Amino acid sequence: MSILVATDLGEIELTEWLKCLHEAMPGETLITDRLGWDAQDIDIAIVANPSEGSLQGLSSLRLIQSLWAGVDKLLGDITLPPEVPLARMVDPAMNQAMAQTALWAVLGIHRGFFRYAQQQSAKEWKQLPQCRADEVTVAMLGLGEMGRTVAQRLATNGYCVIGWSRKPAQVPGVESRHGDSALGPVLAQANIVLNLLPLTGETRGIFDRKRFVQMRRGASIVNLARGAHVVDADLLEALGTGQIEHAVLDVFHAEPLPCGHAFWTHPQVTVLPHVAALTDPRSASAVVAKNVRALRRGLPLQHLVDRSKGY
Image: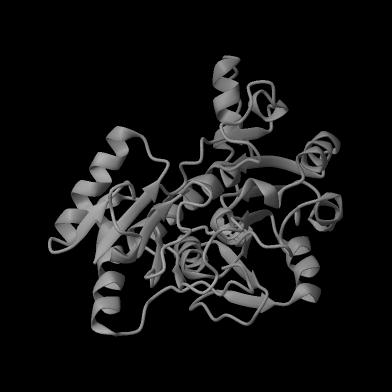
């Protein structure tokens, strides 16, 4: 049996992925083009933004393994075979990379480093007030694998972390709350709100005017999840009124972020080009290989997506 690698990766990036996948699964046959292959011989698909319909007609398909942590775009493809198990990427190396970015963003806001960068541009020498990390409350929204890693990293660095998720979740050293009724009070307590929620029908546009009003005046937001979580116009309004002091944004409705978008030049917005935690082909290929071996041996698969929940 063969494995179809269906992606929109460029030639150089795809070559690197294939090299790492071959090294992790030396006995497997990897193909990148279905033409010339019998569809019945393909039982696994490794995907990263596959083109719509690219997995149709694969009657022997037994596993769709995503190379990305988020699967919202995949689930939006109506041609995705509904009966085939879908696994998302959960890579400890990616989790650590996300924790590093989150800590940088929180430190940048807490210690005024983004404001100091603006002062440097203006050649302005001015010391800002400084508080301790334990005086800063961070609301960590989303307590999945990645969110738990981030919450623990922030707590280890002295921040007061309150985790929130839709269902109960326990994270050592972190106060956690759950359910819709708890979200407003959590937002009201936080100096910094950090979003790592999955994108679902319930969370799309969750950061709108209503939520910004619930946040403590002068709080900041860090969005490292999906651009569609934020209503851009409402965030710009909240920044303009002083309800929100600063926004660190790694993800956007349209990527690349259009040149004319207000976020590019807004003095209270820090823009990243979707780099908070890039998938590393070396470590991610090992994760893929583990699931492939499990499938071949009839063992349970890891990190399967509940399609009814969207993650």
